[in-house]
Length: 142
Image (cartoon, rainbow, N blue to C red):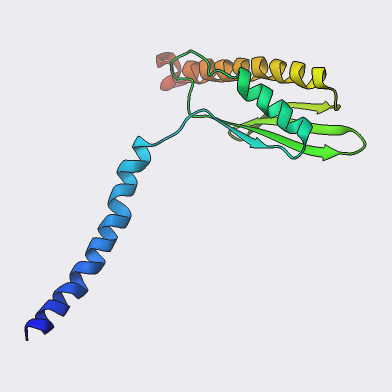
């Protein structure tokens, strides 16, 4: 009799505990562990990796408060005829592209230029969003 009661309680308690452990921590952990400003490497060759390394070495997030919630992805596609095609994507927007030849100085210079271009884009996008959400534009848009 005791084993019957014990097994029926376990049949109810175990699934309840499993459901609670699966769903309850997810909502609290997700908001606490959000990571902003990732720089992701999706390069294929030495040239692309050098570009990514130089870019990430010189990258510093913009100092404006509110410029967050972005992911930068450095993408490369190798082409034997043209060199390496480099794209930089911020979230879902492609905002930089360049064909790189395998010359050391060119790769470093272009990566430094890309850092400036990405920073300008992020600050401009932030200011644009801030103006859209300004009190004057929030209700009627006039």
